[in-house]
Image (cartoon, rainbow, N blue to C red; front, top):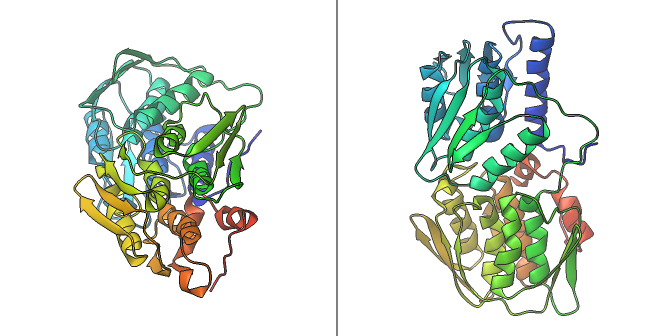
Length: 380
């Protein structure tokens, strides 16, 4: 049973998985068609180790800003374990060889996806392996999500100490029965934040959210409560009521980088200063998301100061409309659209988002849902 959004990222992963399965099913040693991961960092970092764990050769095509995003730590570890790369073209990677086991050392401060990709792949090889995370593992909840899914698939992984994973080889994936893909707290956060920005007697309820999820982005509930919002959770439904005064706070985003854009919306209406800390990795997303957010906010009249690891927003002041670029970044599109509700009514409060189609990367139904909540949108 599936309940997922058919976004560009999901399409990239599905298409690549289909090609990999076809090669294995037909006992091929090479994937015949190039694997186009589009601009999906997760797809790229997940399939690379899986392809070579299966002993396949493949050509991988990347789009947009993806070739600029961190990848070297994963490539270096794969090369140390028998894998050959050809990167003569910046947007293409040719990969081949049979992955061997042993010790894989991955820095914890660049991308949790390096760890997740190895955890998915290493159970498939003949040898036992260890993944050792050096330094602090940032975005730890994303690794916990990976471990949770692997456990449901019958995969055994042991963590004898934080960031040190032991993976027995020769395992087999088994997933039986029906499984529901749980709701995405990262995307739901935009609607929950909008609820906190509403007037008295207004609210927004999002259903399909697992309160026991290992998703780190369910922390949006705690963030909103700390800012002063009235939040009610019951079963799989979260309701945020408007009319409460919000106050600026300090938010450590080390483990919740994807929550920064929705938090920004709340920070703009909150009284006082909101400080976003430990968000350096936002500079290596679909855009330099720190710079992109600051550019959008300043265009709309928000006072914001840049920091090396984030920024400070001085909220509680009136916003104005304006024309803002999307920076090819899906979360910037959603943030800008949500900020429209904080601007004056009428044409002077309109926000024109150039390149709004970038939202298709993760949430193609975003503007449809936005309209269902009373938002007005027009395509130009």
